Amino acid sequence: VSGGKILQVFQGGTNTAASSSVASQAVWDVGVEVSIIPANASNTILLQGTFTGCTSNAINNFNIILQKKTGSGSFANITAANGAVDGNKTSVLSSTFQDNLYTNFTVAYSYLDTAGSTDTLSYRLVYFNTSSSTRTVYRNRAHTETDHYSSVRGGSWIQALEVAA
Image 1 (cartoon, rainbow, N blue to C red):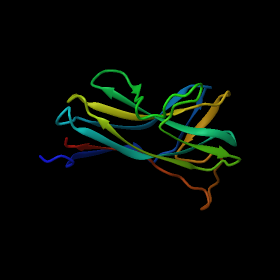
Image 2: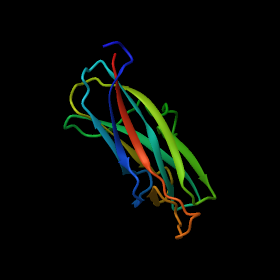
Image 3: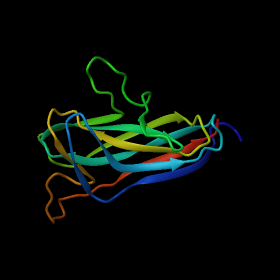
């Protein structure tokens, strides 16, 4: 097998709408997850996708963090995938700022992770509420919706592609 060849591809995620009340400085597992069993621990896993949603406040950061679980372990932030820590700033994979809008936002991302194991690797996205207040967070929909063609729904996905070393 030559380096760079795509060995396998998996996708997880959802196109259904959901919401959750998320406390200040807390995370919400948004239901966007994928698992892959690498053929070789030296291979890399290309992760890419989008998360679509909105919050209940007109001015708020819309942040996602990438997490990984190996085997039966626990999910933890992939520190290298998220922004470099600097003072009190929050380290996230990708973000957008919602300013006086209650519409869908799409946060796109990609990251190349080292497999490091041939156990099942699970990757997921979590939303992180940087606000000092509790916010309702919406997945794949806007804060306010009407049954009208101008109201839109989105999808949130994650793809894992194993790349030969």
